[in-house]
Image (cartoon, helix red, strand yellow):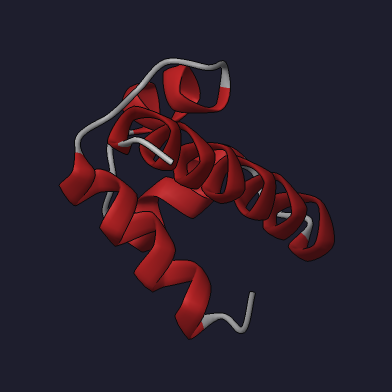
Length: 69
């Protein structure tokens, strides 16, 4: 598998996990972003299919891991 496919797959996995977390926890995207110390506008565009930096992906993944997702 080439690097582009790996990155695209990891982005999709994080999107799915984040959507599941928001639904399961019942919090808003804004509340999540405030708690995770992320910019809501960046996460909004990420959830809608755009890419974000690898650092942002790592921060989302770290937050979700802490929350048991």
